[in-house]
Length: 172
Ligand SMILES: [Zn+2]
Ligand SMILES: [Zn+2]
Image (cartoon, rainbow, N blue to C red):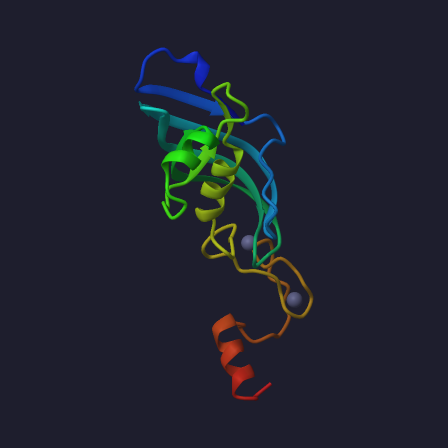
């Protein structure tokens, strides 16, 4: 996703950028694909720096950690970074400065902001995404998706927390 600052004559400016299909790739276990991603930014210019603040939004196809079915989820997160030339940054900013910087590629006021969108989306994602908070998961015996049917297997209600406790105390 290329942020092209040449289009603005006055600041502050507002910009909406939409990802091309397949442009944002998230290499994360539960992510099947990024369906769509968008970045909305307010941009303020100060000297040689462009301060960008806004929101990244994405529709992401995920795999449920319990029932393993795929589902789509809308994710959103704020993002905040500064765009400037690398040369200017190296001459004026301390490396210990903990702002997020993106540098122009060449001298032409264009910068690739795909990584900022990817990071914002990853941070908004839970480690174990669930298709619904009360997803019933899969039967431990026959593997049936318990959201769709009850299989009739005589298994104890498995609760992951109890499972872990049992394993710890050597009862299984
Ligand atoms: Zn599920
Ligand atoms: Zn079963």
